[in-house]
Amino acid sequence: VNGGSLFRIHRDTRFSKDKTPYMTNTGMHFRHERAKDVHSPGFYLHLEPRNCFMGVGIYKPETKVAYTIREMIAAEPDRWQAITGGDFADTFALMGDSLKRPPKGFDPDHPLIDDLKRKDFIASATLTQSEVTATDFADRFEALCRAGGPFMAFLCEAVGVDY
Image (cartoon, rainbow, N blue to C red):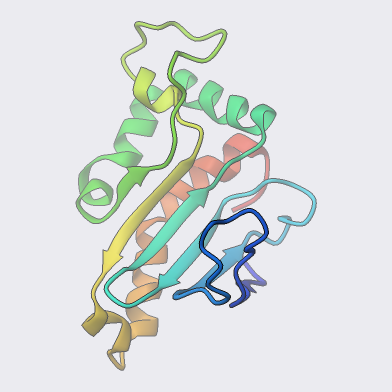
């Protein structure tokens, strides 16, 4: 992973009832080196008073990209469960939006149907205010990135980019 993006501080208020001009958080997205031409997984850091977290994965992939990830989950269910279970599940929570119905072409009775219905393939780890202000925070963030590595590797393989 290389590059990165610090989200802007100004809110887009054009279509919002809330016209507050500034965001109350800082978001940083550490994108895959090919993120400019391919929807690729990445790491995310969200800093906000009483709401800090680290994210890993791919947020709102295009339909075609989501389908390739679903195909890989369906083809390798044991690997997916091994990656998203155990220590990973102790640290991260899978989250994001899901389809109401099973995606086209997938068995509604598939044992991983909840994962196959995902629109987002992201996981997050909650961080405390003390953790993000500690002198060793960079080391803690790096450790979380490493812990999310197998999840990232699976997603990168699914979308056809190196990890």
